Image: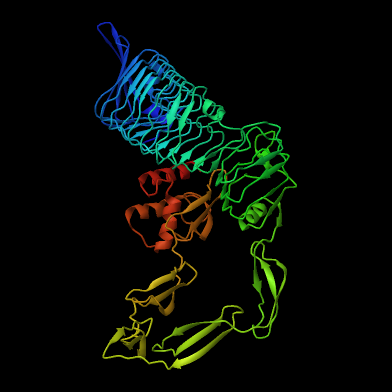
Amino acid sequence: MKRLICFLLALTITLTVTPVFGATVYKYYCEDGITAKVDATAKTLTLSGEGDMMDYAADNRPPWYERKSIYTKVIIENGITSIGDYAFTDNLVLVSADIPESVTKVGDYAFQKCIKLTDMHFSDNVKEIGIYALADCNALKRVTLPKVLPEIPQALFRCSYYIESIVMPEDCPSIGASAFMSCSYLKNITLPANLRSIGNYAFNGCNALASVTIPNGTESIGDFAFYSLSKLSEINIPSSVNYIGEDAFCGTPWYNALSNGFNLINGIAITYKGSATTKTLKIPEGAVTVAPGICGSAIYATEVIIPDSVKSISQYAFYGLSSLYSVTIPDNVETIGDYALGYYASSLGSPTPIYPFTIYSSNPVAKEYAENNQFDFVCLHKEYSLSNYPDCTVGGTADKICLCCGEIIGTEDISKGTHSYKTKIFGATCTENGFIKSSCTVCGYERTTVTEPATGHTANGSFKIQNSTCAESGCIYKLCDICGESFDEVKIEKLPHTPSEKKTVVTAPTCIEEGEYCVLCKDCGEVLEKGTIPAHGHTKSSEFTVLNDSDYFEDIKGLYIRECTNCHIALDYGEFYKGDLNNDEEINSRDIIIIKKILAGDISYDEEKLILLEFLGDMNNDGEITSRDNIALKKIVRNG
């Protein structure tokens, strides 16, 4: 879709005002080939044409925007395939819009703030609707969406308060952030059967919703998605949901009916419900995931207890606990999100670390989080391995190595004993002997016993040829019938180079410096020969460059130079009077005789001399010697 700058648009739009039987019609011919007609009497805007409508912007509105107070109805004729961004934004009198089946896309902010628009119907041919497309449409009551959409886009119906009925898509896997935010009169909604995610604030402010059934297969419910809906007393959450965002259901009658403390939904511990002054936050046993913002209003807690069942701590999980200076992370935790622990909001609202903050754990994931956020980490050394294990037949001590931090945390005495072998048999191959490898499962001691010699390669006429080139030698070798490896290689000498027929210029010559060339092999590109290219010498220009012009009567000599046509170095220079052809510093009859010879073609001068004479005799500087120059020279002699 084209996006044109505002001033370009202004250059390419033609406005025609046509009075028809007392009516006034405004026509606009747009860059995208679409014609817009505003009929002031019928109060309609009719758009006609073929193809996509161009996108507009907040600071680059469509041409019909200037007449937005005239038309209450938009008619888009069949043939137009898209509605551009900001096409009808801020139309405060628009009541209805006819969208044909040819339209497949509706752009961002297309109908935003059309505060008198009451109904909107999209055909099933629409495959994409932009963000905020129907936001802030205060009078909008009924909407029909296409049967298939890739998503309900961000803020599609945000603050369209009076929507009562929405025919939802049957196939739509995603509901974007704030999609239905503040649709206060929306009482019922049927979510698509294949829904997978519900965005942040998606239904925030839909205070008429009393019940919601989230389809089986939905996996994610965003932050504040159903926050504080005053009538939402029934929520059906399927077992497929594995992520619930911060305060997703807080403030609803359904949430208020839950028991105090933390509640579990599919193993997700959701926002704390209870006293804001509690000092200890204990996540219940069986919790697998800790949701974002789980502490809720209990921001004065000084202790957090996380059970061993927890595997995931979401981003911002314990955000805002400014009095919490340490926490113990269980060994089973696999992920810790950004700002999950040790952060609170500064006065500017940005995440601010708490220092000092200490993490106690024997979990490498906790150690990595502490290091990445520059928090103190105290390893609990719960699991270890043995290093420097002594020989079983001798005994001694082995080092105990912490599996989390890698530190030596002590030693362990190993008493004298006997090896406990585990054996593995390796058969002979073409190149290696067969053997038995015995490894002690206690101390790691290994011994190897050869059982049979290598069998050697076997080939029954199988061979392969690698052709030689001028860059590499070739070879002929046999292929083993058993292992497929090559053996008994015979090298083939490299091929001779084939010189290229043309020389390659490496450095071009100049007037005074030699150039360089090389001859390459046309097969491999190797340099076979190098040589020099003679300097081509200066080429003196046939034209003169006048640095200072002459004035014979004021006794002012001119100054000229002649340059090289290639490098523009000055090769020749001299002083002159225009007309002084014999260079005696006087302009007289002798000069007239010379110019007459030039005009008559009676030339006895060499080429260099003639070029100079033609320059001196060109009195009117028109680039040639003519009778006019002779007349001019005679005038100077006469007046001299």
